[in-house]
Amino acid sequence: LRKRHPVPEKSNPEIDAALGNRNGPGTRFTDFEVGLGQSFEPGARRSARIAGGNAAIAQSSANIDEVTRTVLRLAASAYYRAVHANERIKLLNATHELAASVYATADRRFKAGDIAVLDVNIARTSLARVRAEREGAEASKALALGELRQLLRLENDVGVEGSLALPGATDLTAALQTASQRPELRGLEAAIAEADAERHIAGLTCLNEGTIRDWTKHGKFNVTQGKNWDASGAIGPWL
Image (cartoon, rainbow, N blue to C red; front, side, top):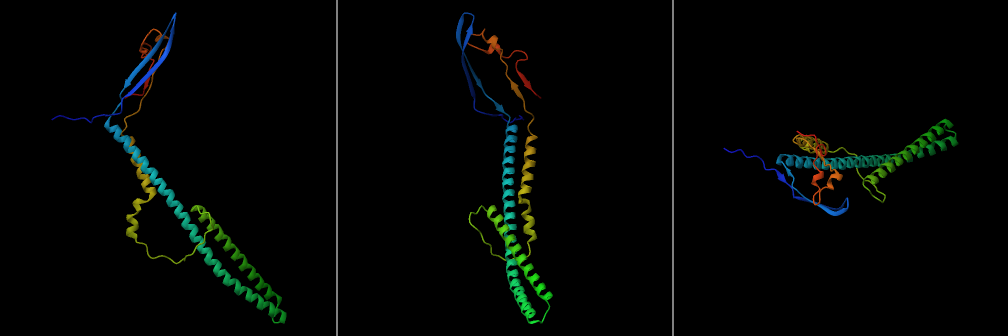
């Protein structure tokens, strides 16, 4: 039996070229350098890198879904607050008519001498309280509609119509089945996958190529004589 090792992945060859003038004692010449490089990457490392990239994309998609979900939740909250304020305004309008009628009746009876002025003041205070509550409800509605228009990026004024009646019973089984698709859970799964992909990368290393420029003047057509000296090409860390 022959054990097969994964074939390293390779990229396209790279060609480097350099050209310049060299001045020496009593001489001047043109120096050029041509290099050909080919990098190889183990298949496992490439797969880990791709897995990490896919996990990062999945996490970004989950974050976008979470932002969308947050905006929808805020828009729904603003909508129901506007509906609630609208219902309050309708109720307070009817209450205002009743309070105004009570105040008018109390004023007529006071002028007729049937009741004391205290009863008129109580009716007037009740009417003022209803007016203040109605103005507060109108302000709450305007605030909720402003938030809704801002969240939905609407330029014109908006109006809402709806009911505050409770919906039907929630299907618990369906809710549990869709719980795994929540954006925040998908984001955590993507982060775990990205972290797991990075575990397969053995390590990274850096090379700092060094050139002794004065020594390159000794070479007429090649500058490699000034490279690869001891301690001129720092590299590390290594396994």
